[in-house]
Length: 385
Image (cartoon, rainbow, N blue to C red; front, top):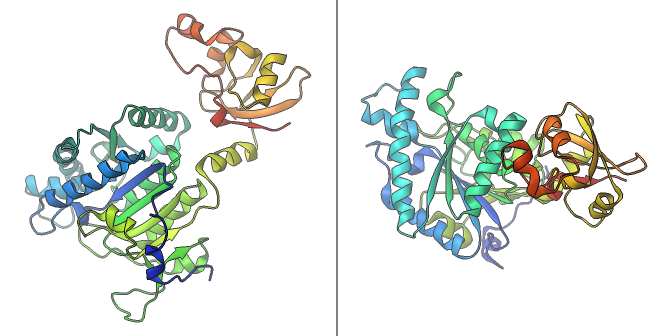
């Protein structure tokens, strides 16, 4: 079994576990945010979490929140008391619950002068390339403007059966999408055990997982509460997504007030280690992609600029080939025709052909809209020759 069994006390030693984090995604389960008896939002807990978020931001860190709870909140206000809601009842509950959740987050963070932005995503938004890019651009822009995106699955328009536990996977997908380096799953458990601690008093806590093996996956159990359906199975799946994107992930009990401060204080938790950084993982994926949707050819000046680590600007492009769309992988060729790089196009082939050879400041006049200054940003580009 590849899992380091570290003493809990060792987690409190040394610097804060979030000290080196730059962009943090915090996933909050329904059982933490919503009182199971009354169906009301736990405002004291949420205000304490907001204090933690404000502290992280004051230290120069970006924070995104993936929040469950819309259906759990909304069902009570609509009088939906059945344990097994029909799909349309879940959607109705989500529609009213989302308003209440958004207002609660707005009030909690407004105490610190922090702007909240609500983002609703569907699985297609995270998995279809163009929608992925649009959602990524929206969230990174919100971060650059100082806002805290609060993200949930778009349950109100779902056409497939809603699964509560999907927000573990959504948290990982968001972390992957925005190139976060840390994903925090605030849960009703304090991490991974080699057996179910509720039924086995001898279960051992796993402090650190270097690699997700079949043995690690076998430790996963079922959800433990009525409101939370994201059990350890979904958390392991989330860890696999996050760590493969260069994002480490931690599972920690979120019940105490100020749960992020508790994490930084050395509380018992389980860290899933990433083997690479988000940027390196993204570039490795680009470099290892098998098929390209098109190609561009450069002049000598652009070729030299790429060799110095610059982005590819339209001015240096001499030819555009293929029918690629925005976000597709394309190859980049030098003056002699050989491949020198590959990357993700910020424009489709038709628009790229129109702006090739032109300065970035001319793009809006040519296309009628203002896109990126670069045809391929350096973060989305890998030198291959």
